[in-house]
Length: 331
Ligand code: FAD
Image 1 (cartoon, rainbow, N blue to C red):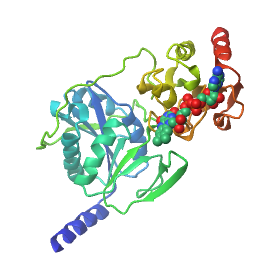
Image 2: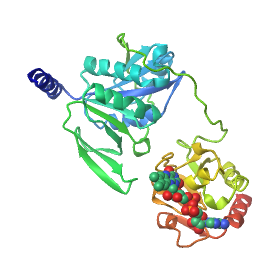
Image 3: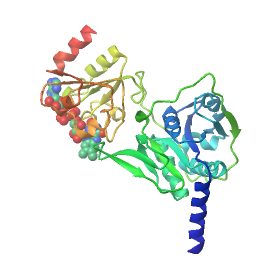
């Protein structure tokens, strides 16, 4: 209709006319926050213009204090309200939409985490914008790179939407850091009338004393070759010697050798630690999609032709049940 065309044109014109500016969604976790926001801030800084962080939840004021000290953040908008706890998409997307309008933001960033993947599509729909997901590079204000086909090809995407809704692959951008000189202004978010269409009930988290897989500097992963849940113990033992997080291939998870929260790959976690040790893992593309950006890759496999050796920096050919106990002893 003419009205709809005028509306679309009006939004487009408004966005073109205004200067560039970005909102970054920070997921609060009580008085803490998901650190993927720090990577999203780095991505947002590639767009010229101010970077406004959005912090929402019952302890948003405490989180806002920490975010205000992050270099590159121009302002922190604080929505201190329990309705925003657990980042339910209906309430959070409505808040972000209201703030996009208030701030005239041209870009809205979130990390490509469970919460980011939950909230941002809804926001994109509310803004009538095509979301750009899992970006690994910000080339310009309208052009982004993202992996496709499990990382086997990289698509360069140019967006003609006036407002760009973007999730970022956290391992592709360094985390923004706190700086003594940084002190962004804090501002209360306007009250937003959001319909609570869903309710948070509970979460069951796998508890572990080991470093979290997503942020661990070292990761030791086991594959099908460990043969059993008892056999997987050797992976934990080596990881503990190295202070490493523990990962696994899907074959190891499907066989019940370890918890599925440990799965690394296309349908698991994406990690890029400084050191990744893959033990008894063949190196299927779906596994590589989750770890090939690791800085140093070590593979232990009895088959010298296993594909994982093609991307490994160091390879040990031999039986893991001989090599790994020796490694543990030497360490
Ligand atoms: P295998 O491929 O069976 O490899 C075992 C390796 O151990 C072999 O290379 C063998 O030489 C070696 N070995 C055997 N015995 C020993 C020994 N004693 N000492 C040393 N080495 C030994 N996989 C993932 O990992 N993550 C994902 O997210 C994922 N997502 C998928 C999504 C889709 C849609 C599909 C179709 C598949 C996905 N997969 C994923 C599965 C993937 O294709 C592979 O099947 C899986 O990664 C294989 O796991 P593996 O390397 O442990 O087992």
